[in-house]
Image 1 (cartoon, rainbow, N blue to C red):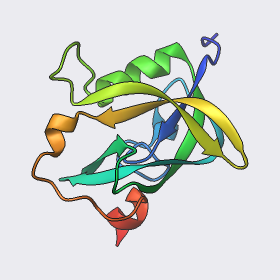
Image 2 (cartoon, helix red, strand yellow):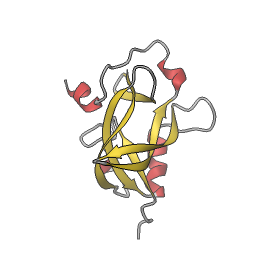
Image 3 (spheres, rainbow, N blue to C red):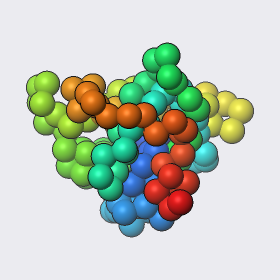
Image 4 (cartoon, rainbow, N blue to C red):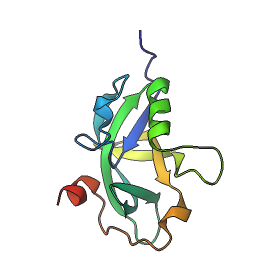
Length: 133
């Protein structure tokens, strides 16, 4: 029997439905909750995005919210290359996400600020629209 769902995750890039790392293809399967929004800035890195939260250039970044198990969280950590210390590609954050007229506390993978130096913001907050256009 799979572990019980323990938290929510907000996915905004390749983990979104139809993305290269679609969370719905991972196991144990997540449970879709709804579309969500946070304020931040998206950056383009080759075939994937990075998000920084807040800031003067912040826009509404859209994504999907899922309930996940600790086992699936470990899979996501590997995909997002979470390692101890300052060299991690992403850092795990717990943030409030607006999900269809309610607020849900979610895990979010925020890009390491050192990785965005010299990169230009995408200018909008929907990776799927950017990536498919």
